[in-house]
Length: 382
Image (cartoon, rainbow, N blue to C red):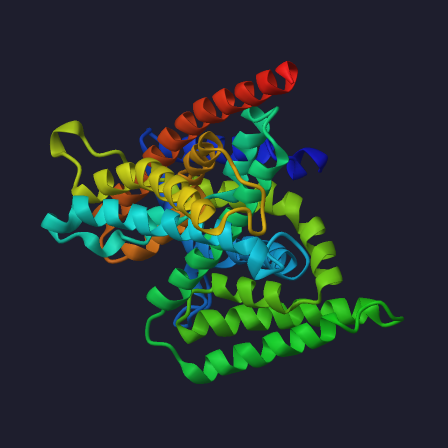
């Protein structure tokens, strides 16, 4: 379990799972893999008749978003983002890291009219970014990790908003209201834990969580938003405990399964060519994120001085920007949602996310290593 809570191993596991998915989709076992992914489980004729792939992306991934939302709640109330003064610099950097990739993507895809995928390159994968930092960043000042963590959390907020607002279809407001009522009840009960009836309350909390998920799914809003609602509603102390218990399962099962399923993409023959969707995401992730985060972070420090956080050198901002280009988990989900009506474009968008994230990973590993070496030398000289 300790290994699955580390910064390094989960990132490696995700990469292996994605590579396995690509390998299966382009091997003799492809038909079997796709058949399993598309096999339906559930109640026919209801919103709960989902394919295995959708049970993973709509069901299991909601647990991941719950864990993310618990961390987000902690950071907003007791962590690095607990005051506007502390959050303003990473917030501006995160904004730059959203706007610049969108601009790059739209510039590349605009002439073809395939701009629908603009949200895809806006996400940063916290697990991957922190994993790379842990492997290659020995010697970097702690402020870099703090800045990156705050940046990635704010980035997640943007991704969650995109999923909730852009990809909700035919929303049933009554069901959504019931989901919100169940969320409120969940939050109230979580604040009653600690007494003699805690076991019964835990059972009720699980039932309420499942009801909230089912209602959100049936309402037309993407089901992962249920995880976000519950993670923000839960009392802080039980939330932190739940996150600690769920983290190994999320890192060891949920995210690898999602990466494997999302990466089940047949690579097009070279002669067929790839659409601007692939190239837009491939360039927007490593280039747009790096330029946007580093540029906006530098501008924020110039305009705000040392407000809230120590100043970061430009090289450290570039390192954070390079790490921000590893989109992966949320970007894969956004790719599937943005091109849900076109299997070809969806697959190209997913390939773009994988390729762009790998490029960002390599660039980040080099930049972070160089910056870490620079700081170690400076510490030795000092």
